[in-house]
Length: 317
Image (cartoon, rainbow, N blue to C red; front, side):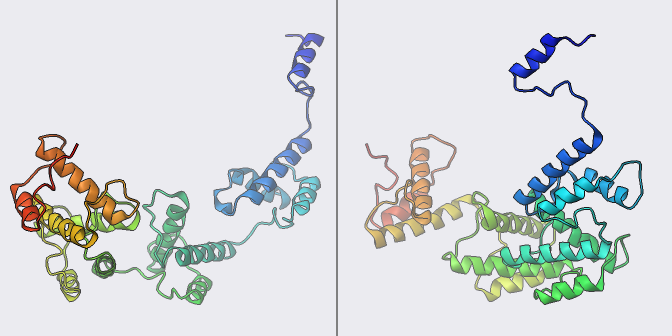
């Protein structure tokens, strides 16, 4: 296919006057170098750099390895952005130390939580996997290396046991304490799976433990967990309760709330507790008319009447 002036004219009309020019490799390399430096300016997590492969190749080239050339113009570009060491090959311990700092800083920002390798968030998953591998290394079960300098870094942040592999019961006990403390701060409310963030995590854990107590699932309910729950005043924390019993408990709470606030809770309230109570009442009213997916229990009606609210479950026009 021959090149014609009309092709050039068309390219220029779209704003691509250099479309048919053959560019040399150094020019292309320089362009990529600019993109990398700009990307680094906009991103704090260098481990997710989409240009890692190109950068690795250039670092090898600077050491005279590989088939690619290293251009001094790339070095000049990197320095102009404030990255004079961009093409330096760093040793593994230095890289490990840098990641260790990131892990510890992340934990400081997340209430001392150890990152999970099962997280859906890419950064937490990455550093969680890193911690897991370092723990395996400490036990001699991985090809990686746990450097004494990593341990020193962890200790400097107040995490001397970061690389200790903890047994499952100890981890379970720690979560049990957190759940009980959470319940103390939320008027003895049991965490709900319909919530979000930490509450949902607690609810899923609690559901698993309750199933374990019934001999279901693959988890284990430790006696130590039961003892912890009792120490906080929650001896029935791991009991599986029927839906009517749970409904009755909520009904009591709502009636007491109404006594204190002299009104029926609104499902549209910005207050989380009132909003929850309001939605519950709305669902029960629908169930009383055989609508929706909820169940209406006569026992809830009896409770409402005992507090002086016989019309609580009547839908008002």
